[in-house]
Length: 195
Image (cartoon, rainbow, N blue to C red):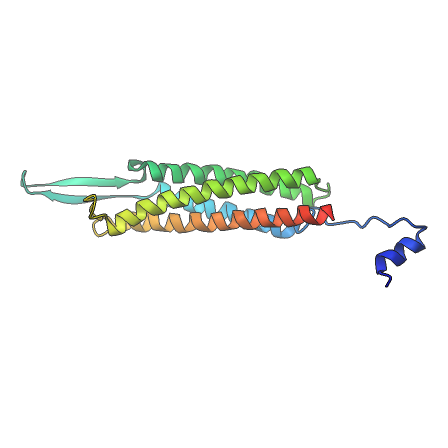
């Protein structure tokens, strides 16, 4: 049974005509939209983490006084790591979105470019996933505490701070998912080029 490609190859003298593909190698519009969404999500999470601070007045029975106790993101190395991961991923999403715009505007992407983007997307997905896990762990301890280590829960006292941290962890999880989708999109585009 002859296929359309066989008929086309037979009509053109035995040589199959090269089919032009999309400029991005796959779905350049979807890739650009995902990169813009990644930028928006990481920037929002970055702002939420950076502004997460709350001061409450805590009574100290021994001194018979009330002492202000602040809670800030920079009091926890895990939250600092989350902030740095969000900063780097936000910058990465901006740079790759500009690169995607350049690819859409006319110059065709090469397999090498797609492979590098695939590797970088996987790397940043791993960084964001680990940062989300560390931030989520700190948030969980803040909500539930740990009776075995005598770490008390703090979210009943620092509710605004905990809402900020929880929101930023959820946004970081969304950013991780977007990066996995970008990696899958680039892998599919690379696969289509190899066929």
